[in-house]
Length: 357
Image 1 (spheres, rainbow, N blue to C red):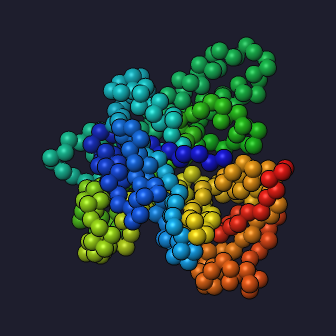
Image 2 (image 1 turned 60 degrees about the vertical axis):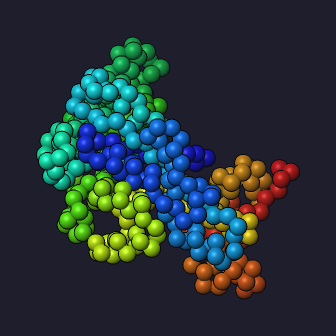
Image 3 (image 1 turned 90 degrees about the vertical axis):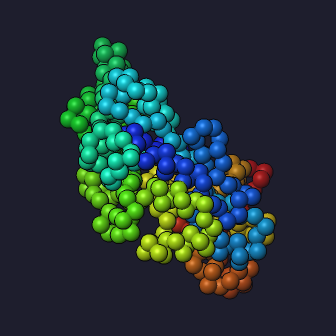
Protein backbone atom coordinates (compact mmCIF):
# COMPACT_ATOMS: atom_id res chain seq x y z
CA UNK A 1 0.00 0.00 0.00
CA UNK A 2 1.19 3.54 -0.78
CA UNK A 3 1.60 5.50 2.42
CA UNK A 4 2.96 8.98 2.92
CA UNK A 5 5.49 9.87 0.21
CA UNK A 6 8.53 11.66 1.57
CA UNK A 7 11.04 13.71 -0.44
CA UNK A 8 14.21 14.93 1.30
CA UNK A 9 15.51 18.30 0.06
CA UNK A 10 19.32 18.14 0.31
CA UNK A 11 22.36 20.11 -0.79
CA UNK A 12 25.25 22.21 0.43
CA UNK A 13 24.62 25.17 2.78
CA UNK A 14 23.14 28.24 1.05
CA UNK A 15 22.15 26.34 -2.08
CA UNK A 16 18.55 27.50 -1.62
CA UNK A 17 17.06 24.43 0.09
CA UNK A 18 15.21 26.31 2.81
CA UNK A 19 14.02 28.98 0.39
CA UNK A 20 12.59 26.24 -1.82
CA UNK A 21 11.00 24.58 1.21
CA UNK A 22 9.50 27.87 2.40
CA UNK A 23 8.07 28.43 -1.07
CA UNK A 24 6.50 24.96 -0.95
CA UNK A 25 5.19 25.67 2.54
CA UNK A 26 3.60 28.94 1.44
CA UNK A 27 2.16 27.53 -1.77
CA UNK A 28 -1.47 28.60 -2.13
CA UNK A 29 -4.07 25.92 -2.76
CA UNK A 30 -7.43 26.92 -4.28
CA UNK A 31 -9.52 24.95 -1.78
CA UNK A 32 -7.55 24.49 1.43
CA UNK A 33 -10.33 22.88 3.43
CA UNK A 34 -9.42 19.32 2.45
CA UNK A 35 -5.64 19.07 2.38
CA UNK A 36 -3.77 22.33 2.71
CA UNK A 37 -0.04 22.47 3.01
CA UNK A 38 0.39 21.83 6.72
CA UNK A 39 3.46 21.79 8.90
CA UNK A 40 3.69 18.48 10.72
CA UNK A 41 6.85 19.37 12.61
CA UNK A 42 9.64 21.92 12.02
CA UNK A 43 10.97 21.61 8.45
CA UNK A 44 8.48 18.94 7.42
CA UNK A 45 5.39 19.67 5.37
CA UNK A 46 2.82 18.13 3.06
CA UNK A 47 1.84 19.68 -0.26
CA UNK A 48 -0.71 18.73 -2.89
CA UNK A 49 0.26 17.32 -6.26
CA UNK A 50 -0.98 19.93 -8.79
CA UNK A 51 -3.90 18.36 -10.63
CA UNK A 52 -6.13 20.23 -13.07
CA UNK A 53 -7.85 16.95 -14.00
CA UNK A 54 -9.13 16.61 -10.45
CA UNK A 55 -10.54 20.14 -10.66
CA UNK A 56 -12.41 19.19 -13.84
CA UNK A 57 -13.84 16.03 -12.26
CA UNK A 58 -15.09 18.08 -9.32
CA UNK A 59 -16.97 20.30 -11.78
CA UNK A 60 -18.42 17.36 -13.72
CA UNK A 61 -19.61 15.53 -10.59
CA UNK A 62 -20.48 18.71 -8.66
CA UNK A 63 -18.44 17.24 -5.82
CA UNK A 64 -18.68 18.65 -2.32
CA UNK A 65 -15.03 17.81 -1.58
CA UNK A 66 -11.79 17.78 -3.55
CA UNK A 67 -8.99 15.56 -2.19
CA UNK A 68 -5.69 15.65 -4.05
CA UNK A 69 -2.71 13.32 -3.90
CA UNK A 70 0.01 14.64 -1.59
CA UNK A 71 3.78 14.55 -1.15
CA UNK A 72 5.75 15.22 2.04
CA UNK A 73 8.83 17.42 1.74
CA UNK A 74 11.57 17.46 4.37
CA UNK A 75 14.02 20.36 4.56
CA UNK A 76 17.22 18.57 5.59
CA UNK A 77 20.03 20.66 7.10
CA UNK A 78 22.90 21.57 4.77
CA UNK A 79 25.54 18.92 4.25
CA UNK A 80 29.26 19.55 4.17
CA UNK A 81 32.13 17.37 2.99
CA UNK A 82 32.94 14.87 5.75
CA UNK A 83 29.32 14.35 6.84
CA UNK A 84 29.79 10.58 6.59
CA UNK A 85 32.46 10.95 9.30
CA UNK A 86 30.28 13.13 11.50
CA UNK A 87 31.31 16.59 10.22
CA UNK A 88 28.65 19.27 10.59
CA UNK A 89 25.33 17.61 11.38
CA UNK A 90 26.80 14.46 9.84
CA UNK A 91 24.92 11.40 10.98
CA UNK A 92 21.71 13.33 11.68
CA UNK A 93 21.73 14.59 8.09
CA UNK A 94 22.24 11.09 6.74
CA UNK A 95 19.63 9.52 9.02
CA UNK A 96 17.08 12.07 7.81
CA UNK A 97 17.81 11.04 4.22
CA UNK A 98 17.43 7.38 5.17
CA UNK A 99 13.86 8.06 6.29
CA UNK A 100 12.86 9.60 2.93
CA UNK A 101 11.55 7.79 -0.16
CA UNK A 102 13.50 9.94 -2.63
CA UNK A 103 16.03 12.77 -2.69
CA UNK A 104 15.68 16.23 -4.22
CA UNK A 105 19.21 17.56 -4.78
CA UNK A 106 19.27 21.37 -4.78
CA UNK A 107 22.34 22.92 -6.40
CA UNK A 108 23.08 26.61 -6.76
CA UNK A 109 23.90 28.12 -10.13
CA UNK A 110 23.86 31.85 -9.46
CA UNK A 111 26.24 34.46 -8.13
CA UNK A 112 25.21 36.63 -5.20
CA UNK A 113 27.90 38.29 -3.08
CA UNK A 114 25.34 38.70 -0.28
CA UNK A 115 24.98 34.92 0.04
CA UNK A 116 27.95 32.93 1.32
CA UNK A 117 28.69 30.06 -1.05
CA UNK A 118 29.72 26.79 0.54
CA UNK A 119 31.63 24.22 -1.49
CA UNK A 120 32.69 24.83 -5.08
CA UNK A 121 31.52 27.32 -7.66
CA UNK A 122 30.36 24.48 -9.90
CA UNK A 123 26.86 22.98 -9.38
CA UNK A 124 28.00 19.68 -10.88
CA UNK A 125 30.72 19.43 -8.23
CA UNK A 126 28.29 20.38 -5.47
CA UNK A 127 26.02 17.53 -6.54
CA UNK A 128 28.99 15.16 -6.52
CA UNK A 129 29.97 16.23 -2.97
CA UNK A 130 26.58 15.10 -1.67
CA UNK A 131 26.71 11.86 -3.69
CA UNK A 132 30.21 11.12 -2.36
CA UNK A 133 29.01 11.42 1.23
CA UNK A 134 26.12 9.04 0.53
CA UNK A 135 28.52 6.57 -1.07
CA UNK A 136 30.97 6.77 1.84
CA UNK A 137 28.19 6.13 4.36
CA UNK A 138 26.99 3.14 2.31
CA UNK A 139 30.53 1.78 2.13
CA UNK A 140 30.73 1.97 5.91
CA UNK A 141 27.47 -0.02 6.22
CA UNK A 142 28.53 -2.62 3.64
CA UNK A 143 31.96 -3.09 5.24
CA UNK A 144 30.34 -3.70 8.62
CA UNK A 145 28.04 -6.31 7.11
CA UNK A 146 30.89 -8.10 5.33
CA UNK A 147 33.11 -8.12 8.44
CA UNK A 148 30.30 -9.46 10.59
CA UNK A 149 29.15 -12.21 8.21
CA UNK A 150 32.16 -13.25 6.10
CA UNK A 151 32.56 -16.56 7.97
CA UNK A 152 28.85 -17.48 7.94
CA UNK A 153 28.08 -19.94 5.13
CA UNK A 154 24.33 -19.25 5.22
CA UNK A 155 25.04 -15.62 4.26
CA UNK A 156 26.82 -16.61 1.03
CA UNK A 157 24.25 -15.01 -1.31
CA UNK A 158 24.02 -11.77 0.64
CA UNK A 159 27.80 -11.56 0.93
CA UNK A 160 28.11 -11.92 -2.85
CA UNK A 161 25.73 -9.02 -3.37
CA UNK A 162 27.52 -6.97 -0.70
CA UNK A 163 30.88 -7.51 -2.44
CA UNK A 164 29.34 -6.48 -5.76
CA UNK A 165 27.98 -3.29 -4.19
CA UNK A 166 31.29 -2.53 -2.48
CA UNK A 167 33.23 -2.87 -5.73
CA UNK A 168 30.98 -0.32 -7.47
CA UNK A 169 30.82 2.09 -4.52
CA UNK A 170 34.64 2.10 -4.38
CA UNK A 171 34.57 3.33 -7.99
CA UNK A 172 32.27 6.19 -7.02
CA UNK A 173 29.16 4.60 -8.56
CA UNK A 174 25.84 5.23 -6.82
CA UNK A 175 24.03 2.05 -5.81
CA UNK A 176 21.05 3.23 -7.89
CA UNK A 177 23.21 2.82 -11.01
CA UNK A 178 24.31 -0.74 -10.31
CA UNK A 179 22.53 -3.41 -12.35
CA UNK A 180 20.97 -6.16 -10.23
CA UNK A 181 18.97 -9.21 -11.24
CA UNK A 182 15.61 -9.92 -9.59
CA UNK A 183 17.05 -12.07 -6.80
CA UNK A 184 19.81 -9.54 -6.08
CA UNK A 185 17.25 -6.72 -5.88
CA UNK A 186 15.47 -8.50 -3.01
CA UNK A 187 18.77 -8.69 -1.10
CA UNK A 188 19.84 -5.12 -1.91
CA UNK A 189 16.67 -3.69 -0.35
CA UNK A 190 17.69 -5.25 2.97
CA UNK A 191 20.80 -3.04 3.15
CA UNK A 192 18.80 0.26 3.16
CA UNK A 193 21.46 2.02 1.09
CA UNK A 194 21.34 5.82 0.89
CA UNK A 195 22.75 5.93 -2.63
CA UNK A 196 20.09 3.48 -3.82
CA UNK A 197 17.31 6.02 -3.31
CA UNK A 198 15.74 7.55 -6.42
CA UNK A 199 16.58 11.22 -6.87
CA UNK A 200 16.19 14.27 -9.07
CA UNK A 201 18.09 17.55 -9.32
CA UNK A 202 16.76 21.09 -8.89
CA UNK A 203 19.01 23.87 -10.17
CA UNK A 204 18.48 27.14 -8.31
CA UNK A 205 19.14 29.91 -10.85
CA UNK A 206 18.89 33.69 -10.82
CA UNK A 207 15.83 35.55 -12.10
CA UNK A 208 17.34 36.43 -15.46
CA UNK A 209 18.19 32.81 -16.19
CA UNK A 210 14.78 31.75 -14.95
CA UNK A 211 13.16 33.78 -17.70
CA UNK A 212 14.85 31.56 -20.27
CA UNK A 213 14.26 28.00 -19.15
CA UNK A 214 15.87 26.63 -22.30
CA UNK A 215 19.23 28.02 -21.19
CA UNK A 216 18.85 26.76 -17.65
CA UNK A 217 17.93 23.21 -18.64
CA UNK A 218 21.28 21.92 -17.45
CA UNK A 219 22.49 18.35 -17.73
CA UNK A 220 24.28 16.56 -14.90
CA UNK A 221 25.71 13.17 -15.79
CA UNK A 222 23.14 12.85 -18.62
CA UNK A 223 20.25 13.59 -16.26
CA UNK A 224 17.59 16.23 -16.83
CA UNK A 225 17.23 18.86 -14.15
CA UNK A 226 14.39 21.06 -12.94
CA UNK A 227 15.44 24.73 -13.13
CA UNK A 228 13.81 27.12 -10.67
CA UNK A 229 14.46 30.47 -9.04
CA UNK A 230 13.67 29.68 -5.40
CA UNK A 231 13.41 33.36 -4.46
CA UNK A 232 10.85 34.06 -7.20
CA UNK A 233 8.90 30.97 -6.13
CA UNK A 234 8.86 32.16 -2.53
CA UNK A 235 7.49 35.52 -3.68
CA UNK A 236 4.83 33.78 -5.78
CA UNK A 237 3.48 32.10 -2.65
CA UNK A 238 2.06 35.46 -1.56
CA UNK A 239 0.13 35.94 -4.83
CA UNK A 240 -3.43 34.93 -5.63
CA UNK A 241 -4.03 32.43 -8.44
CA UNK A 242 -4.69 35.08 -11.10
CA UNK A 243 -1.84 37.31 -9.90
CA UNK A 244 0.49 34.34 -10.05
CA UNK A 245 -0.50 33.55 -13.63
CA UNK A 246 -0.02 37.15 -14.69
CA UNK A 247 3.38 37.39 -13.01
CA UNK A 248 4.57 34.16 -14.63
CA UNK A 249 3.44 35.51 -18.00
CA UNK A 250 5.65 38.57 -17.51
CA UNK A 251 8.56 36.15 -17.02
CA UNK A 252 7.55 34.18 -20.11
CA UNK A 253 6.91 31.04 -18.02
CA UNK A 254 3.83 28.84 -18.38
CA UNK A 255 4.15 26.71 -15.23
CA UNK A 256 5.54 27.65 -11.83
CA UNK A 257 8.80 25.96 -10.90
CA UNK A 258 7.26 24.46 -7.78
CA UNK A 259 4.64 22.65 -9.81
CA UNK A 260 7.41 21.14 -11.92
CA UNK A 261 9.28 20.12 -8.75
CA UNK A 262 6.23 18.40 -7.27
CA UNK A 263 5.40 16.59 -10.53
CA UNK A 264 9.04 15.53 -10.90
CA UNK A 265 9.01 14.12 -7.36
CA UNK A 266 5.88 12.14 -8.21
CA UNK A 267 7.41 10.84 -11.45
CA UNK A 268 10.73 9.97 -9.80
CA UNK A 269 8.97 7.58 -7.44
CA UNK A 270 7.32 5.78 -10.35
CA UNK A 271 3.80 6.74 -9.33
CA UNK A 272 0.59 7.58 -11.08
CA UNK A 273 -2.93 8.64 -10.13
CA UNK A 274 -6.36 7.23 -10.65
CA UNK A 275 -9.59 8.95 -9.68
CA UNK A 276 -12.88 8.31 -7.96
CA UNK A 277 -15.53 10.94 -8.48
CA UNK A 278 -19.06 11.54 -7.26
CA UNK A 279 -21.32 14.04 -5.49
CA UNK A 280 -19.68 13.46 -2.12
CA UNK A 281 -16.09 13.90 -3.29
CA UNK A 282 -13.65 13.68 -6.16
CA UNK A 283 -10.31 12.22 -5.15
CA UNK A 284 -6.93 11.40 -6.64
CA UNK A 285 -5.40 8.14 -5.40
CA UNK A 286 -1.69 7.35 -5.60
CA UNK A 287 -0.50 3.97 -6.88
CA UNK A 288 2.70 2.55 -8.30
CA UNK A 289 2.87 2.17 -12.06
CA UNK A 290 1.99 -1.41 -12.97
CA UNK A 291 -0.60 -1.89 -10.23
CA UNK A 292 -3.54 -4.09 -11.20
CA UNK A 293 -7.15 -3.24 -10.40
CA UNK A 294 -7.42 -5.21 -7.09
CA UNK A 295 -4.23 -3.56 -5.78
CA UNK A 296 -5.60 -0.13 -6.68
CA UNK A 297 -8.87 -0.99 -4.93
CA UNK A 298 -6.87 -1.93 -1.84
CA UNK A 299 -5.49 1.60 -1.64
CA UNK A 300 -9.01 2.80 -0.92
CA UNK A 301 -9.75 0.02 1.58
CA UNK A 302 -8.28 -3.42 2.19
CA UNK A 303 -11.81 -4.89 1.98
CA UNK A 304 -12.05 -3.64 -1.62
CA UNK A 305 -9.02 -5.71 -2.61
CA UNK A 306 -10.00 -8.77 -0.62
CA UNK A 307 -13.55 -8.84 -2.04
CA UNK A 308 -12.72 -7.44 -5.50
CA UNK A 309 -15.25 -8.37 -8.20
CA UNK A 310 -14.50 -5.91 -10.99
CA UNK A 311 -13.57 -2.32 -11.81
CA UNK A 312 -15.86 -0.05 -13.81
CA UNK A 313 -13.45 2.21 -15.70
CA UNK A 314 -13.44 5.15 -18.09
CA UNK A 315 -10.57 7.39 -19.11
CA UNK A 316 -10.48 10.98 -17.92
CA UNK A 317 -10.58 12.31 -21.48
CA UNK A 318 -13.66 10.23 -22.29
CA UNK A 319 -15.67 11.31 -19.26
CA UNK A 320 -14.84 14.96 -19.96
CA UNK A 321 -15.95 14.55 -23.57
CA UNK A 322 -19.20 12.80 -22.58
CA UNK A 323 -19.93 15.05 -19.62
CA UNK A 324 -20.90 12.68 -16.81
CA UNK A 325 -20.49 9.15 -15.46
CA UNK A 326 -24.20 8.36 -15.80
CA UNK A 327 -24.31 9.47 -19.43
CA UNK A 328 -21.18 7.44 -20.17
CA UNK A 329 -22.91 4.42 -18.63
CA UNK A 330 -26.01 4.97 -20.78
CA UNK A 331 -23.80 5.11 -23.89
CA UNK A 332 -22.02 1.88 -22.94
CA UNK A 333 -18.66 3.63 -22.54
CA UNK A 334 -17.88 2.31 -19.06
CA UNK A 335 -15.54 -0.67 -19.32
CA UNK A 336 -15.83 -3.68 -17.00
CA UNK A 337 -12.31 -4.80 -16.07
CA UNK A 338 -11.26 -7.88 -14.09
CA UNK A 339 -8.44 -8.69 -11.68
CA UNK A 340 -5.79 -8.80 -14.46
CA UNK A 341 -6.44 -5.22 -15.55
CA UNK A 342 -3.35 -2.98 -15.27
CA UNK A 343 -4.34 0.50 -14.18
CA UNK A 344 -3.66 3.31 -16.64
CA UNK A 345 -2.78 6.90 -15.77
CA UNK A 346 -5.89 9.02 -15.26
CA UNK A 347 -8.41 6.16 -15.05
CA UNK A 348 -11.71 7.18 -13.42
CA UNK A 349 -12.98 4.15 -11.50
CA UNK A 350 -15.76 2.62 -9.46
CA UNK A 351 -14.86 -0.68 -7.80
CA UNK A 352 -17.35 -3.49 -7.27
CA UNK A 353 -16.58 -5.81 -4.36
CA UNK A 354 -18.13 -8.41 -2.08
CA UNK A 355 -17.86 -7.41 1.59
CA UNK A 356 -18.49 -10.99 2.76
CA UNK A 357 -15.19 -12.27 1.32
